[in-house]
Length: 156
Image (cartoon, rainbow, N blue to C red; front, side):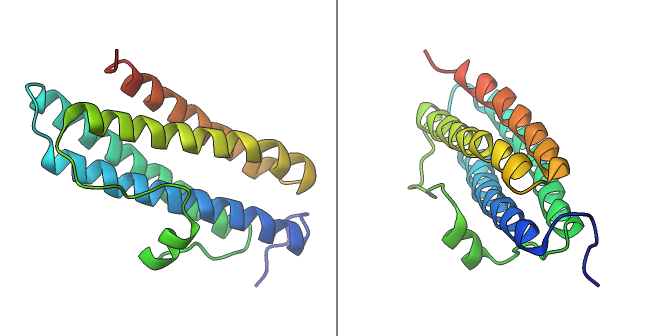
Protein backbone atom coordinates (compact mmCIF):
# COMPACT_ATOMS: atom_id res chain seq x y z
CA UNK A 1 0.00 0.00 0.00
CA UNK A 2 1.40 3.39 -1.00
CA UNK A 3 1.86 6.10 1.59
CA UNK A 4 -0.83 8.81 1.35
CA UNK A 5 1.04 11.56 3.19
CA UNK A 6 0.32 14.62 1.07
CA UNK A 7 3.50 14.46 -1.02
CA UNK A 8 3.43 13.42 -4.67
CA UNK A 9 4.92 10.09 -5.74
CA UNK A 10 7.46 11.95 -7.89
CA UNK A 11 8.58 14.01 -4.89
CA UNK A 12 8.81 11.05 -2.50
CA UNK A 13 10.89 9.18 -5.09
CA UNK A 14 13.29 12.12 -5.30
CA UNK A 15 13.55 12.35 -1.50
CA UNK A 16 14.00 8.57 -1.22
CA UNK A 17 16.97 8.79 -3.60
CA UNK A 18 18.53 11.58 -1.52
CA UNK A 19 17.98 9.53 1.65
CA UNK A 20 19.35 6.35 0.08
CA UNK A 21 22.47 8.21 -1.04
CA UNK A 22 22.90 9.43 2.52
CA UNK A 23 22.31 5.88 3.76
CA UNK A 24 25.11 4.69 1.47
CA UNK A 25 27.46 7.39 2.80
CA UNK A 26 26.63 6.43 6.37
CA UNK A 27 27.24 2.74 5.69
CA UNK A 28 30.65 3.42 4.14
CA UNK A 29 31.55 5.69 7.07
CA UNK A 30 30.34 3.03 9.53
CA UNK A 31 32.54 0.37 7.89
CA UNK A 32 35.55 2.69 7.81
CA UNK A 33 35.10 3.67 11.46
CA UNK A 34 34.74 0.04 12.53
CA UNK A 35 37.87 -0.86 10.56
CA UNK A 36 39.79 1.91 12.31
CA UNK A 37 38.45 0.74 15.68
CA UNK A 38 39.84 -2.72 15.02
CA UNK A 39 43.20 -1.61 13.62
CA UNK A 40 44.28 1.54 15.46
CA UNK A 41 47.89 1.63 16.68
CA UNK A 42 48.74 4.71 18.67
CA UNK A 43 49.95 5.94 22.06
CA UNK A 44 46.29 7.00 22.40
CA UNK A 45 45.05 3.51 21.48
CA UNK A 46 42.47 3.06 24.24
CA UNK A 47 41.03 6.56 23.88
CA UNK A 48 40.67 6.24 20.11
CA UNK A 49 39.44 2.64 20.31
CA UNK A 50 36.63 3.84 22.60
CA UNK A 51 35.96 6.95 20.52
CA UNK A 52 35.62 4.92 17.33
CA UNK A 53 33.34 2.44 19.09
CA UNK A 54 31.10 5.26 20.30
CA UNK A 55 31.07 6.75 16.81
CA UNK A 56 30.15 3.56 14.96
CA UNK A 57 27.51 2.75 17.58
CA UNK A 58 25.88 6.16 17.02
CA UNK A 59 26.26 5.79 13.25
CA UNK A 60 24.34 2.50 13.46
CA UNK A 61 21.43 4.38 15.04
CA UNK A 62 21.61 7.08 12.35
CA UNK A 63 21.66 4.41 9.63
CA UNK A 64 18.56 2.77 11.07
CA UNK A 65 16.80 6.14 11.27
CA UNK A 66 17.57 6.95 7.64
CA UNK A 67 16.32 3.57 6.42
CA UNK A 68 13.15 3.97 8.47
CA UNK A 69 12.62 7.48 7.06
CA UNK A 70 12.77 6.06 3.52
CA UNK A 71 10.11 3.52 4.51
CA UNK A 72 7.94 6.20 6.15
CA UNK A 73 7.68 8.08 2.87
CA UNK A 74 6.66 4.90 1.05
CA UNK A 75 9.84 3.57 -0.55
CA UNK A 76 12.42 0.86 0.07
CA UNK A 77 15.75 1.45 1.74
CA UNK A 78 18.84 0.20 -0.07
CA UNK A 79 20.41 -2.71 1.75
CA UNK A 80 23.11 -4.23 -0.43
CA UNK A 81 26.78 -3.33 -0.21
CA UNK A 82 27.05 -3.18 -4.02
CA UNK A 83 24.27 -0.57 -4.08
CA UNK A 84 25.91 1.48 -1.34
CA UNK A 85 29.17 1.62 -3.27
CA UNK A 86 27.32 2.85 -6.37
CA UNK A 87 25.46 5.57 -4.43
CA UNK A 88 28.05 6.82 -1.96
CA UNK A 89 29.97 10.08 -2.18
CA UNK A 90 32.72 8.64 0.03
CA UNK A 91 35.79 6.55 -0.75
CA UNK A 92 36.63 3.40 1.18
CA UNK A 93 40.32 4.30 1.11
CA UNK A 94 43.41 2.25 1.80
CA UNK A 95 44.01 0.42 5.04
CA UNK A 96 45.77 2.52 7.66
CA UNK A 97 46.47 2.13 11.35
CA UNK A 98 47.97 5.63 11.69
CA UNK A 99 46.08 7.86 14.13
CA UNK A 100 46.35 11.13 12.22
CA UNK A 101 45.47 9.56 8.89
CA UNK A 102 42.45 7.84 10.39
CA UNK A 103 41.19 10.99 12.10
CA UNK A 104 41.71 13.11 9.00
CA UNK A 105 39.92 10.55 6.82
CA UNK A 106 36.96 10.38 9.21
CA UNK A 107 36.82 14.17 9.49
CA UNK A 108 36.84 14.52 5.70
CA UNK A 109 33.98 12.02 5.45
CA UNK A 110 31.89 13.74 8.10
CA UNK A 111 32.44 17.09 6.41
CA UNK A 112 31.50 15.60 3.02
CA UNK A 113 28.27 14.31 4.54
CA UNK A 114 27.63 17.68 6.20
CA UNK A 115 28.00 19.54 2.90
CA UNK A 116 25.75 17.06 1.11
CA UNK A 117 23.03 17.10 3.74
CA UNK A 118 23.14 20.89 4.00
CA UNK A 119 22.73 21.19 0.22
CA UNK A 120 19.68 18.89 0.28
CA UNK A 121 17.70 20.25 3.24
CA UNK A 122 16.25 23.25 1.40
CA UNK A 123 15.60 21.21 -1.75
CA UNK A 124 13.73 18.52 0.22
CA UNK A 125 11.60 21.10 2.00
CA UNK A 126 10.98 23.69 -0.72
CA UNK A 127 11.18 21.76 -3.98
CA UNK A 128 9.85 18.38 -2.84
CA UNK A 129 7.50 19.68 -0.11
CA UNK A 130 8.70 17.16 2.50
CA UNK A 131 9.07 19.10 5.72
CA UNK A 132 9.39 15.91 7.79
CA UNK A 133 12.39 14.67 5.84
CA UNK A 134 13.95 18.15 5.85
CA UNK A 135 13.61 18.23 9.64
CA UNK A 136 15.07 14.72 9.86
CA UNK A 137 18.03 15.76 7.69
CA UNK A 138 18.62 18.77 9.94
CA UNK A 139 19.01 16.38 12.86
CA UNK A 140 21.49 14.25 10.91
CA UNK A 141 23.40 17.41 9.98
CA UNK A 142 23.73 18.37 13.66
CA UNK A 143 25.04 14.90 14.57
CA UNK A 144 27.75 15.07 11.92
CA UNK A 145 28.69 18.63 12.86
CA UNK A 146 29.29 17.45 16.42
CA UNK A 147 31.40 14.49 15.32
CA UNK A 148 33.40 16.69 12.95
CA UNK A 149 34.10 19.06 15.83
CA UNK A 150 35.26 16.16 18.04
CA UNK A 151 37.56 14.80 15.33
CA UNK A 152 38.87 18.25 14.39
CA UNK A 153 39.97 18.71 18.01
CA UNK A 154 42.55 15.91 17.53
CA UNK A 155 44.23 17.75 14.65
CA UNK A 156 46.56 20.71 15.02
